[in-house]
Length: 241
Image (cartoon, rainbow, N blue to C red; front, top):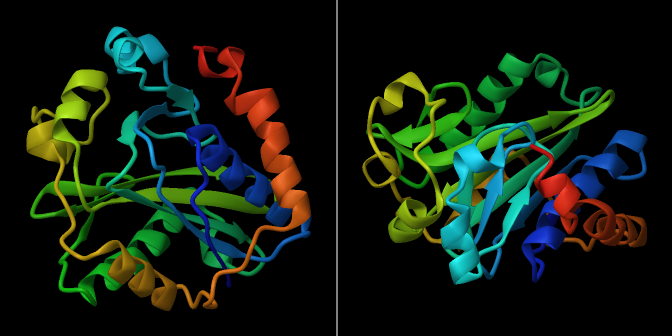
């Protein structure tokens, strides 16, 4: 599996690169890929189908200059930025037949992620539909976008939680997994003790990603820039719901 360890400067570029690589894998131009990234600035990102006003304290975001974006995958609203290491898998179904079914794909990938964390002494458990938790505290939220020949699965690995930012910028969600109960963000979200370097290494091992990291293709970079201009930098996309 190809490895891309690539953190870009802006939230828009980072979200767009995940989609650009998915499209390249979907078309057969690129091989199965594992990408790591961590945005250098805070931003709020909502799921593709979420209503912005129900999820985000937009007045606080505007006051503090925190961008609000919409990603191409489903799932819930989260605060991104330093302390949140992201991993993204862009996989063709033909090479990973166990991922053709949505539910089975979550189980398969999160089982592997649990193995990666267990190798670092972290007893993570698959909770809800798409979370990993340690002792009932969420340390990884995950989401997917599925196309005809390939899909994108990406998730967070939270090693330093911004609890104050979560309280200030995120509304308490109405749609919540059973294991969360009535807990607020601070009481529900945990932190991973391993370093980002250790997390990268363990995830690479369980997915047999080839080290060292490669660079995106010229076509992927061009597609990323186009997606920033036409989609992720567009208020029409962000505010469509």
